[in-house]
Image 1: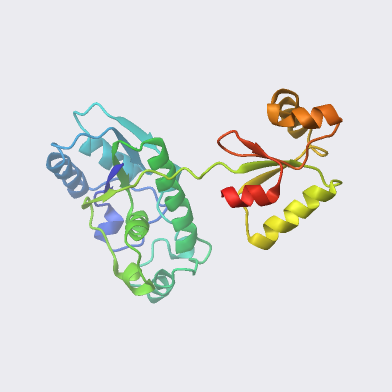
Image 2 (image 1 turned 90 degrees about the horizontal axis):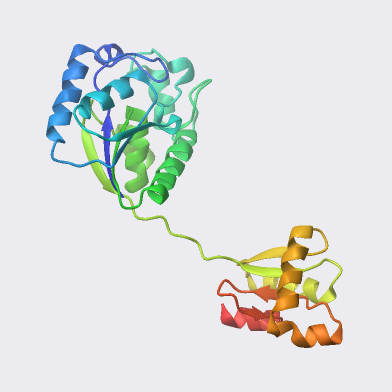
Length: 269
């Protein structure tokens, strides 16, 4: 996914150097002109979709940039500006505001910490990439959110993070790699009263093997139903069926193959 990120156009509080988080202000005339100019600069770029903060200044900016385009615009609360709590409306150079801004793990009084903001924005970026892996996307958001997006692609220390700023309607581009799909876990069918199952769990813990999902057929009817369907249909269980046994522990690999010995499973990983 190719991601274009811009900050909204100027608002009155931007002009007055006031901290503006959740206060929902419109664009100034200059802010509207900035958005229109950005739209012209991006006129040669095809956007498959636009994602924007639901706040008025971001919505107005997105609408002006995309004027004349046929493009899907989505509003996402994950892109809303940071909650600056008691620092809302303060001078941007206020010492108390700057103290909290400089410390990544520190929260603004009655507001959000940078880490809280990063958690929601990072998760949103990864979910967006998984949903739109081949698309070109424009994100219209806020200064604090833009800073966190930059930190996702370019790791920063506290001081670099503190100093980073995007101007109104500045545009940055990023390449978001397709989300990696984790390998499916091995399904381990067993039960807590089975001695061999308990020994297999101990062996896996000893070897540090965690790539399995434990399906306890004694605690879950869903797991039991899955296991019986395997037991009654797969040729690997023929001898077990003839002997009247249960067939656990049983390990169903992601490729559909089955084995019954934990050592054999470990060797194949």
